[in-house]
Image 1 (cartoon, chains in turn orange, red):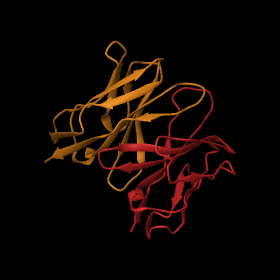
Image 2 (cartoon, chains in turn blue, cyan):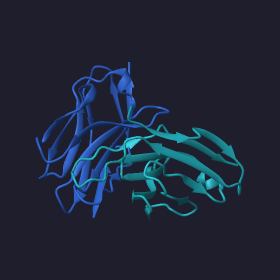
Image 3 (cartoon, one colour):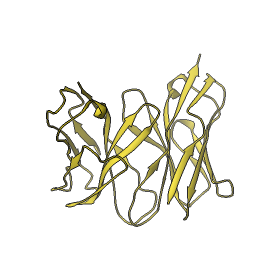
Image 4 (cartoon, helix red, strand yellow):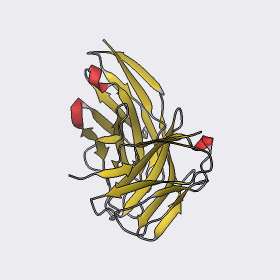
Length: 114
Length: 115
């Protein structure tokens, strides 16, 4: 079984300050982990993914995430928020190999203030 | 260009009037899926398909049907829509090969309102 918990439903930051979106997962195997972003009235787009290679993963638009097995976490960070980062972010866990059934977190809404 | 295309993008319909939301992908993906997105509930999976003629229920299948007669198409059917099916729907696809880290590709969403 697998599950994913996004610890904050909303995160509010000022432009130019760091972003931290938290994600904890639970799985009985070594998972694949993803972050997706959804801008208003758009579909979801892949930001980055972890697939058992380097634990620090770099994605698009300056985002990165670190896989920490001991903490079962995959938090998303960005050093400096931009207004265009305002969106909904989803953490996703899946079982690598075989049947591919991903589990989505409930999403975190990132609000960026000028 | 790799894409998942779903239609219609916006639809208002009446209770009980059957409707179909089409989904097509051009990436030869084995895995396709339908999700609905509701405020505070994130994305919930309705049905998924691992290949042609293979479909299975997700977390919220009640009131929906799907079919997978061709690899590229995965329509979502609401036989008798009800107001609680008012939602934003996403179709998605992914390579179903036995490799880890398969990216999911999403359509742009279909806003459905049932009155």
